[in-house]
Length: 126
Image (cartoon, rainbow, N blue to C red; front, top):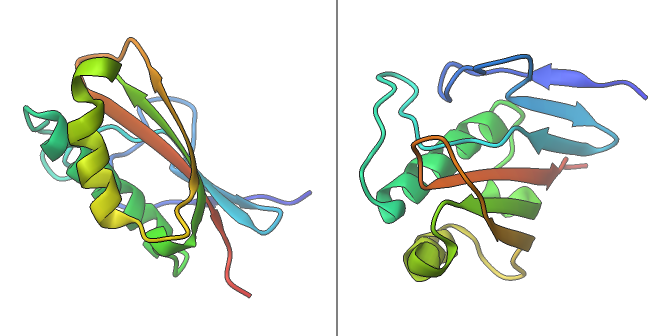
């Protein structure tokens, strides 16, 4: 199997030994992105604003391969405060995806000073 890294300055740079995205087997897989602004590193205070930034970061990686959130087939979402923040996060998430929605797993996680992290799998276009 061949794989190709996807890289953009329009999303936060990796903080370790991982790629922003990988293309393999007809799909683009992204790293888990937090809400850091790629230019400043700033993090917005609320889960709604953080979700907006996370989806902007993911969209930037997808765009490097000519894809959008409409090409996403699977998302995995980590929320620092699952019960408290789910409704607000979900309202923002829902604005960015259309039916048929990607399959999704949303879990509570102990995140490092952020409220939301998301990774996606997108189908490459034919």
